[in-house]
Image (cartoon, rainbow, N blue to C red; front, side, top):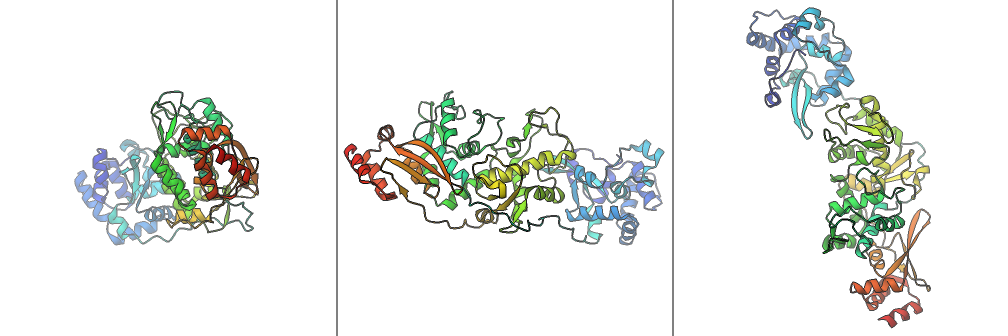
Length: 528
């Protein structure tokens, strides 16, 4: 390619102009000199480098060289300077054109430097652009850079036209009140574990739920997965799976003494259940944002990640690059999800792949054979991931509201439409305290011993109710769920086995229920 480096360890430090030129072949040095009108006085590489560096760094020469560039090359250099003077090579070449492979013999024979094929080659042969290796979170990545001596002499680039954020929808569609899906799902999971309903097939393997345990969880879920194998490593992402993954990662779940059932780690679980609703939501959002166990890309329902062991993505890094973009959305405004995805593609296409390389990951559409390689599949991979994160985890966690036809709370994952960052989401993205919520709704006990727990009830109350009742189902009203339990002999017996007698149950209901029928009181008193 004309310019190279001796080894990655040296290349990281080789960002100065002279060091960059020292890694060029004599043929490349002569090509740069010819393009710049510099008549070299020696054929010795060290002297060629010294003379050429002095010429390229001369302010008057640099101004003339820049003026001789085409508008496309000037714009490419300005974009590079806006990015701090360096950018991943695949990303730069994707935008501005690739440098044709050319060793010394081809360069001298075909004289490619006199007929650059694109803006990248223009800057390359003018000596304004060089390769370097940069240590990133993803390892060593090849970058193209402008040497700092030259960058300091170049004029400050004009601000780029900001393709982000896109314009919000003119007529904002109606969105239903947030449902706190993940909070309710977590409460369901913790209650099931507490009452001993999650048995394990393999001793102490927290992921080896028995089929009956999966059924119990599915029938109590607000968005039950269609596939009973939803805990499998390759299963698509779902609300129950997110709750289980975060609970595992937070250390809330453990195997019991015999290793045959899931049990709770009491102190952190109780602290979360006792926290205000806003803090509960913020805790789960923080857990998702830092989760390494939950891989949004490989959980995207439309995609299948081929686990070859030769590649890997960084879900935490992806979120860290994506969330600041979402923080720039207009408060209270609704956005078309497809339009938002297109704007992110235009402004930060490499939010998931900071090296700009789209040819090394093994990803298919579920059920398809061909791998989705190349930037041309951006919408099929990155676009699908964005749809999932916004309409999946961020919606489930209460940071994003779905608008229009997307807003049905019981839908597993709507495919298209509009989104709005919720008030809770805005506070979380800004690092502000969560907004205060309404007072928790009190419980109401029916004469037939039915105990419906509304969505607005404290999660701790529902957790306690589940310990002495049997599960009946979920009803929906105005987009909000009500969890139906029934005080029963089997539920009271199970509670007694855990040290909760009927007297304690009655005391709890007298404290937390707005209505408590006399026949229910008498029945509990007789058992007490």
